[in-house]
Image (cartoon, rainbow, N blue to C red; front, side, top):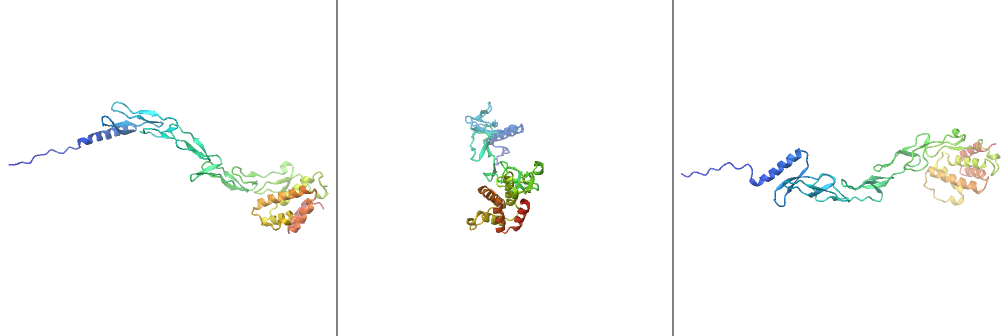
Length: 305
Protein backbone atom coordinates (compact mmCIF):
# COMPACT_ATOMS: atom_id res chain seq x y z
CA UNK A 1 0.00 0.00 0.00
CA UNK A 2 1.31 3.38 -1.05
CA UNK A 3 1.95 5.81 1.77
CA UNK A 4 2.34 9.53 1.11
CA UNK A 5 5.76 11.08 1.99
CA UNK A 6 5.77 12.83 5.32
CA UNK A 7 7.18 16.31 5.15
CA UNK A 8 8.77 18.06 8.05
CA UNK A 9 7.57 21.42 9.34
CA UNK A 10 8.58 24.31 7.06
CA UNK A 11 11.55 26.41 8.25
CA UNK A 12 10.64 29.52 10.18
CA UNK A 13 12.94 31.66 8.04
CA UNK A 14 14.27 31.30 4.56
CA UNK A 15 18.08 31.02 4.43
CA UNK A 16 18.25 34.04 2.11
CA UNK A 17 16.56 36.26 4.71
CA UNK A 18 19.02 35.40 7.47
CA UNK A 19 21.61 38.12 6.69
CA UNK A 20 18.86 40.76 6.66
CA UNK A 21 17.63 39.65 10.04
CA UNK A 22 21.13 39.63 11.47
CA UNK A 23 21.69 43.14 10.09
CA UNK A 24 18.47 44.40 11.65
CA UNK A 25 19.41 42.76 14.95
CA UNK A 26 22.84 44.42 14.88
CA UNK A 27 21.32 47.79 14.06
CA UNK A 28 18.83 47.40 16.89
CA UNK A 29 21.62 46.53 19.31
CA UNK A 30 23.69 49.56 18.21
CA UNK A 31 20.69 51.88 18.46
CA UNK A 32 19.98 50.61 21.96
CA UNK A 33 23.54 51.48 22.87
CA UNK A 34 23.02 55.06 21.62
CA UNK A 35 25.19 54.80 18.52
CA UNK A 36 23.89 56.06 15.15
CA UNK A 37 24.40 53.50 12.41
CA UNK A 38 23.52 52.77 8.82
CA UNK A 39 23.41 49.57 6.74
CA UNK A 40 26.26 49.03 4.29
CA UNK A 41 26.85 46.20 1.84
CA UNK A 42 30.49 45.31 1.38
CA UNK A 43 31.37 45.57 -2.31
CA UNK A 44 33.75 42.60 -2.19
CA UNK A 45 32.06 40.11 0.11
CA UNK A 46 28.50 41.28 -0.66
CA UNK A 47 27.93 41.02 3.07
CA UNK A 48 25.58 43.44 4.80
CA UNK A 49 27.26 45.33 7.66
CA UNK A 50 26.12 47.80 10.30
CA UNK A 51 28.41 50.84 10.13
CA UNK A 52 28.67 53.76 12.51
CA UNK A 53 27.63 57.16 11.18
CA UNK A 54 29.99 60.15 11.20
CA UNK A 55 29.47 63.12 13.55
CA UNK A 56 28.62 66.70 12.39
CA UNK A 57 31.50 68.38 10.61
CA UNK A 58 32.69 65.12 9.03
CA UNK A 59 31.68 62.68 6.28
CA UNK A 60 32.20 58.99 5.53
CA UNK A 61 35.65 58.78 4.02
CA UNK A 62 35.56 54.98 4.04
CA UNK A 63 32.69 52.70 5.14
CA UNK A 64 33.31 50.11 7.78
CA UNK A 65 34.47 46.58 7.05
CA UNK A 66 33.92 43.35 8.92
CA UNK A 67 36.88 44.14 11.15
CA UNK A 68 37.37 47.89 10.60
CA UNK A 69 35.27 50.83 11.81
CA UNK A 70 33.90 53.64 9.66
CA UNK A 71 36.59 56.17 8.75
CA UNK A 72 35.34 59.76 8.94
CA UNK A 73 36.98 62.74 7.24
CA UNK A 74 36.79 66.44 8.19
CA UNK A 75 34.74 68.65 5.88
CA UNK A 76 36.93 70.83 3.63
CA UNK A 77 36.62 74.64 3.66
CA UNK A 78 33.22 76.06 2.57
CA UNK A 79 31.57 72.69 3.23
CA UNK A 80 29.61 71.31 6.18
CA UNK A 81 27.50 68.52 7.65
CA UNK A 82 25.06 69.59 10.33
CA UNK A 83 23.94 66.20 11.66
CA UNK A 84 25.24 62.68 12.18
CA UNK A 85 25.42 61.28 8.69
CA UNK A 86 26.72 58.68 6.24
CA UNK A 87 27.27 61.07 3.35
CA UNK A 88 30.10 60.42 0.95
CA UNK A 89 30.90 64.13 0.76
CA UNK A 90 30.07 67.25 2.78
CA UNK A 91 27.47 69.72 1.62
CA UNK A 92 28.53 73.01 0.05
CA UNK A 93 27.74 76.22 1.96
CA UNK A 94 25.30 77.60 -0.59
CA UNK A 95 23.60 80.39 1.39
CA UNK A 96 24.55 83.85 0.03
CA UNK A 97 23.49 86.95 1.98
CA UNK A 98 21.47 89.46 -0.01
CA UNK A 99 21.86 93.22 -0.45
CA UNK A 100 19.91 94.10 2.71
CA UNK A 101 21.33 91.22 4.73
CA UNK A 102 24.43 90.63 6.80
CA UNK A 103 26.13 87.44 7.90
CA UNK A 104 24.76 86.31 11.25
CA UNK A 105 26.78 83.08 11.35
CA UNK A 106 29.67 82.17 9.04
CA UNK A 107 29.96 78.93 7.12
CA UNK A 108 31.69 76.38 9.31
CA UNK A 109 32.20 72.62 9.24
CA UNK A 110 29.05 71.98 11.30
CA UNK A 111 26.58 74.40 9.71
CA UNK A 112 25.74 76.45 6.65
CA UNK A 113 26.07 80.23 6.52
CA UNK A 114 23.14 82.10 8.14
CA UNK A 115 21.99 85.61 7.24
CA UNK A 116 19.85 88.23 8.92
CA UNK A 117 18.51 91.62 7.92
CA UNK A 118 20.89 94.54 8.30
CA UNK A 119 20.22 97.16 11.02
CA UNK A 120 17.23 99.26 10.00
CA UNK A 121 15.49 96.33 8.26
CA UNK A 122 13.36 93.36 9.36
CA UNK A 123 12.43 90.04 7.79
CA UNK A 124 8.93 89.66 6.37
CA UNK A 125 7.69 87.06 3.86
CA UNK A 126 11.22 86.27 2.76
CA UNK A 127 12.26 89.91 2.24
CA UNK A 128 14.11 92.48 4.32
CA UNK A 129 11.86 95.54 4.67
CA UNK A 130 12.93 98.88 6.11
CA UNK A 131 11.72 99.66 9.63
CA UNK A 132 8.71 101.96 9.43
CA UNK A 133 9.29 105.42 10.97
CA UNK A 134 6.93 106.70 13.63
CA UNK A 135 5.21 109.86 12.32
CA UNK A 136 5.27 113.21 14.17
CA UNK A 137 3.20 113.07 17.33
CA UNK A 138 4.22 109.47 18.00
CA UNK A 139 7.39 107.87 19.33
CA UNK A 140 9.07 104.49 19.25
CA UNK A 141 7.59 102.14 21.85
CA UNK A 142 9.57 99.06 20.78
CA UNK A 143 12.53 99.50 18.42
CA UNK A 144 12.60 97.42 15.27
CA UNK A 145 14.69 94.25 15.23
CA UNK A 146 15.91 92.00 12.41
CA UNK A 147 12.67 90.03 12.83
CA UNK A 148 10.15 92.70 13.87
CA UNK A 149 8.98 96.08 12.60
CA UNK A 150 9.03 99.26 14.68
CA UNK A 151 6.16 99.65 17.15
CA UNK A 152 4.93 103.22 17.70
CA UNK A 153 2.77 104.87 20.33
CA UNK A 154 1.16 108.34 20.60
CA UNK A 155 3.20 110.76 22.66
CA UNK A 156 1.64 111.05 26.12
CA UNK A 157 0.89 114.48 27.65
CA UNK A 158 4.05 116.45 28.40
CA UNK A 159 6.04 114.83 25.59
CA UNK A 160 6.42 115.33 21.83
CA UNK A 161 7.94 114.06 18.61
CA UNK A 162 8.45 116.65 15.88
CA UNK A 163 9.75 114.39 13.11
CA UNK A 164 9.36 110.95 11.61
CA UNK A 165 11.85 108.50 13.09
CA UNK A 166 12.28 104.75 13.46
CA UNK A 167 14.54 105.15 16.49
CA UNK A 168 13.52 108.19 18.58
CA UNK A 169 11.16 108.04 21.54
CA UNK A 170 8.86 110.87 22.61
CA UNK A 171 10.84 113.60 24.37
CA UNK A 172 9.70 115.69 27.37
CA UNK A 173 8.70 119.29 26.77
CA UNK A 174 11.25 121.96 27.58
CA UNK A 175 10.72 123.64 30.98
CA UNK A 176 10.96 127.35 30.16
CA UNK A 177 10.84 128.48 33.79
CA UNK A 178 13.74 126.23 34.75
CA UNK A 179 15.72 127.79 31.91
CA UNK A 180 14.97 131.31 33.11
CA UNK A 181 12.75 131.99 30.08
CA UNK A 182 9.07 132.74 29.42
CA UNK A 183 6.70 130.21 27.88
CA UNK A 184 5.69 131.53 24.45
CA UNK A 185 3.90 128.53 22.91
CA UNK A 186 2.81 125.51 24.99
CA UNK A 187 4.18 122.21 23.80
CA UNK A 188 2.01 119.66 22.00
CA UNK A 189 2.52 116.07 20.93
CA UNK A 190 3.96 117.44 17.65
CA UNK A 191 6.37 120.13 18.89
CA UNK A 192 8.33 121.20 21.93
CA UNK A 193 7.35 124.04 24.24
CA UNK A 194 8.69 127.27 22.72
CA UNK A 195 10.39 129.67 25.09
CA UNK A 196 11.52 133.26 24.71
CA UNK A 197 13.58 135.82 26.58
CA UNK A 198 11.37 138.61 25.26
CA UNK A 199 9.70 139.36 28.60
CA UNK A 200 6.83 141.80 28.31
CA UNK A 201 7.03 141.71 24.50
CA UNK A 202 7.49 145.51 24.07
CA UNK A 203 7.67 145.37 20.28
CA UNK A 204 5.97 148.70 19.86
CA UNK A 205 8.84 150.41 21.65
CA UNK A 206 11.72 148.42 20.13
CA UNK A 207 13.48 150.07 17.22
CA UNK A 208 14.10 147.91 14.14
CA UNK A 209 17.36 146.09 14.60
CA UNK A 210 17.70 147.32 18.16
CA UNK A 211 18.46 145.18 21.23
CA UNK A 212 15.70 142.62 21.80
CA UNK A 213 13.98 143.21 18.46
CA UNK A 214 15.19 140.02 16.81
CA UNK A 215 14.22 137.82 19.76
CA UNK A 216 10.78 139.42 20.07
CA UNK A 217 10.09 139.04 16.35
CA UNK A 218 11.02 135.35 16.56
CA UNK A 219 8.58 135.03 19.46
CA UNK A 220 5.79 136.56 17.34
CA UNK A 221 6.54 134.16 14.47
CA UNK A 222 6.42 131.12 16.74
CA UNK A 223 3.27 132.32 18.47
CA UNK A 224 1.40 132.71 15.18
CA UNK A 225 2.78 129.68 13.33
CA UNK A 226 2.07 127.19 16.11
CA UNK A 227 -1.42 128.29 17.04
CA UNK A 228 -3.87 125.44 17.60
CA UNK A 229 -6.11 126.28 14.64
CA UNK A 230 -7.36 124.26 11.69
CA UNK A 231 -5.26 123.47 8.63
CA UNK A 232 -7.76 125.41 6.51
CA UNK A 233 -7.13 128.63 8.47
CA UNK A 234 -3.37 128.11 8.47
CA UNK A 235 -3.45 127.68 4.70
CA UNK A 236 -5.55 130.82 4.27
CA UNK A 237 -3.06 132.89 6.26
CA UNK A 238 -0.12 131.41 4.32
CA UNK A 239 -1.78 132.30 0.98
CA UNK A 240 -2.40 135.89 2.08
CA UNK A 241 1.18 136.34 3.25
CA UNK A 242 2.62 134.67 0.14
CA UNK A 243 0.95 137.23 -2.12
CA UNK A 244 -1.42 137.21 -5.10
CA UNK A 245 0.50 134.50 -6.95
CA UNK A 246 -0.31 132.02 -4.16
CA UNK A 247 -4.07 132.59 -4.31
CA UNK A 248 -4.49 130.39 -7.38
CA UNK A 249 -2.35 127.56 -6.06
CA UNK A 250 -4.05 124.28 -5.29
CA UNK A 251 -4.16 123.72 -1.56
CA UNK A 252 -1.14 121.61 -0.60
CA UNK A 253 -1.84 118.21 0.90
CA UNK A 254 0.44 118.67 3.88
CA UNK A 255 -0.95 118.03 7.34
CA UNK A 256 -1.23 120.74 9.94
CA UNK A 257 2.30 120.17 11.24
CA UNK A 258 3.76 120.65 7.75
CA UNK A 259 1.67 123.79 7.23
CA UNK A 260 2.85 125.22 10.53
CA UNK A 261 6.49 124.73 9.53
CA UNK A 262 5.76 126.21 6.10
CA UNK A 263 4.10 129.28 7.64
CA UNK A 264 6.95 129.69 10.11
CA UNK A 265 9.49 129.66 7.28
CA UNK A 266 7.51 132.23 5.27
CA UNK A 267 7.24 134.58 8.28
CA UNK A 268 10.99 134.28 8.87
CA UNK A 269 11.65 135.19 5.23
CA UNK A 270 9.37 138.23 5.51
CA UNK A 271 11.17 139.34 8.68
CA UNK A 272 14.53 139.11 6.95
CA UNK A 273 13.34 140.96 3.83
CA UNK A 274 12.63 144.26 5.61
CA UNK A 275 13.64 145.04 9.17
CA UNK A 276 10.80 146.19 11.39
CA UNK A 277 8.07 145.54 8.80
CA UNK A 278 6.91 142.18 10.14
CA UNK A 279 4.43 143.54 12.68
CA UNK A 280 2.35 145.64 10.32
CA UNK A 281 2.48 143.02 7.57
CA UNK A 282 1.38 140.24 9.90
CA UNK A 283 -1.50 142.17 11.48
CA UNK A 284 -2.79 143.15 8.04
CA UNK A 285 -2.58 139.52 6.85
CA UNK A 286 -4.46 138.26 9.91
CA UNK A 287 -7.23 140.77 9.22
CA UNK A 288 -7.40 139.83 5.53
CA UNK A 289 -7.45 136.11 6.35
CA UNK A 290 -10.42 136.70 8.65
CA UNK A 291 -8.54 135.54 11.74
CA UNK A 292 -9.74 138.30 14.01
CA UNK A 293 -9.41 136.23 17.20
CA UNK A 294 -5.75 135.49 16.50
CA UNK A 295 -5.16 139.12 15.56
CA UNK A 296 -6.50 140.26 18.95
CA UNK A 297 -4.30 137.69 20.74
CA UNK A 298 -1.20 138.94 18.92
CA UNK A 299 -2.01 142.61 19.68
CA UNK A 300 -2.74 141.88 23.35
CA UNK A 301 0.35 139.80 23.91
CA UNK A 302 2.99 141.52 21.84
CA UNK A 303 2.05 145.16 21.49
CA UNK A 304 2.13 147.48 24.50
CA UNK A 305 -0.62 150.09 24.42
